[in-house]
Length: 422
Ligand SMILES: Nc1ncnc2c1ncn2[C@@H]1O[C@H](COP(=O)(O)OP(=O)(O)O)[C@@H](O)[C@H]1O
Ligand SMILES: [Mg+2]
Image (cartoon, rainbow, N blue to C red; front, side, top):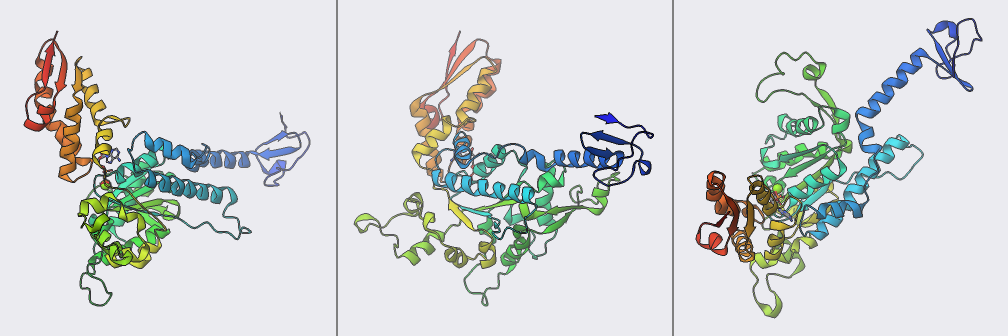
């Protein structure tokens, strides 16, 4: 490559066709020439690509099997949901990348539609954890929003903005990066229209919120104004972003919408004619029915009957569910995931040079108690915290403690764990 001085030959820039005497400088390679202006443009384009899209494009997209295997390291059970989510998420990012690569190729007549996901299932069974872990493996920005907190009036106002603002913050305020992110909207069932029938219902507030979500889910350009909570624009910030707002296109954002949908199983049963009768004609409890994961058989009409606006359900083409966690799953959750509670507590004690031990029967008792609380794996932490609070308080001051053993009685009768000294 040679840099030509003005008096050498007079090539045009191969990119913008300007002549040598119209530009500051031209750099020539074998058969091509580029002017200083085009070099600058290239540098900008590369920087732009590095900032946003490239982070998700350059790396290889993990395949559904890899995604599912990664989920396995954090989430116990829920195999069906893992499979659905892995495929849906893989397809979503594959679609984004093909759009990027082909520039939404006009000659391609197969348009890949956006596939937001509806995730049903009881509380504390791993819905939030699954979506969070998905964002982690894909290394994309992630935000959780609560549907109950969204504006009631049905305006695409403050609260839908707030959801996008959270995502933007998770993307280091880079809108291009945020546009590749995942938003999990929890408790969508809480904004269901109560009572069936469009005309009679007076409770339209939930419906209004659902309406306000439609456009965002489908994909629209929303202006997000970074501001401090409650107050006006960020103090002293003179950035254009703060004043005019940032444009965020929600087309490529993956929305996963979750909810417990209490009562949905009755609607499904009424339709399928399996009303509460199990083997031998015995009436099954709600617990038993949820454990069977009746949600697997859900169809969009059931959700409309539940009170979801048909248009909203229409924008959630992938529907999957998590099952109620049983005793065995709760037991495994205590010890198996990479950041399992027992591992975390062990590590905490280890930092004080103390070994923490759980009797097998103690772990089983923890699982039993969590099961009876009916809040899935949510109860586990509270039960362990309760059992360990006094030793966590005392042990750091007790010279020579080498081991703490949590026994079955610690969990069942509140007896103190056993201490062993040097
Ligand atoms: N299947 C699971 N595997 C491992 N941990 C779980 C599982 N389900 C729930 N948990 C634990 O319970 C807590 C609550 O779970 P979460 O995902 O918030 O439930 P949900 O969103 O379904 O109400 C999480 O912090 C997680 O540690
Ligand atoms: Mg949740």
